[in-house]
Length: 102
Image (cartoon, rainbow, N blue to C red; front, side, top):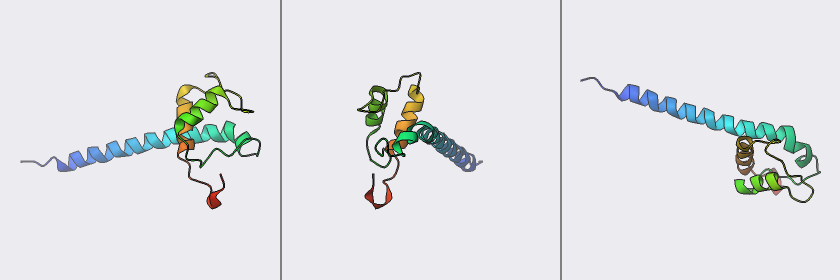
């Protein structure tokens, strides 16, 4: 009787690798959008620091779509829903700034 353990283990490892790759691409797309658009204000002292705040994703998506004080609302033509979801995920998972500055 032939054992299927090696082939099953290989398939499991492949599935984990593909899942990790997909998650990394999702975060990278959000990070890229942050660096291209958001950082122009939020890292230049114009807007507040929004990384490392430990806020839920819904806070970021709500502010982006509706605006807040000096921050304008961004339409679906400015940032599509998929990219916004990736951006919110990226921001929600960024680590706190060293020294507690956020």
